[in-house]
Length: 278
Image (tube, rainbow, N blue to C red):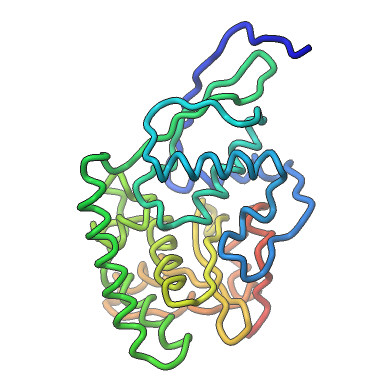
């Protein structure tokens, strides 16, 4: 018989920039399978059955803009919740109104049984924010689609996001694509999610990558161009852009080997395709 919890604790996890990158939690988690190439929701493919159930539940609650505490369909460990939440965020850059911080409640068996989502955009502002968000993406897509190849289109996306945004965490939504596309102030998470969703709209396979760069938590992307996978670090290039007042392509379509000196994937993102083309 399942023992009833003696007491329910509500624990707040405040995720700072790229909290989804807490590598220490990932290192002792065992993933039995690698992500399936070309699956748009690639992180979902490496989750176990319980994690996938919670993943789907979280996604549904974000879509519904549920601001209340809800009970998980299945109790999971703290580490499993952490992995699952990051899988949702990494797969769905279009969910720009949800924050990467959340609250959870656990039982006496130390299993998470409740969750409360946090939002970076007020519910009453979502309609107008969605219009602004979609308009910004549409402008990028319309500019890129005028070019004949995926490589040229990808370059347009890269350049326009660099032109649109400046690196800083001024806004509450800085982990979201909205910050880069609409507010013009973002951090690596916002840049990468903006690049991800714009490429996806163009039919270019693009994934969100987490890891460590230059000793700090960081996010970048993997794209599939001409049948090959490459790394793209829009944030890294924009940092150079803002220093030299030009478009940099130092981190545009590079192999794992070319960025291995200062980019290391998290254990979860290591399940994404290898980028070994030159």
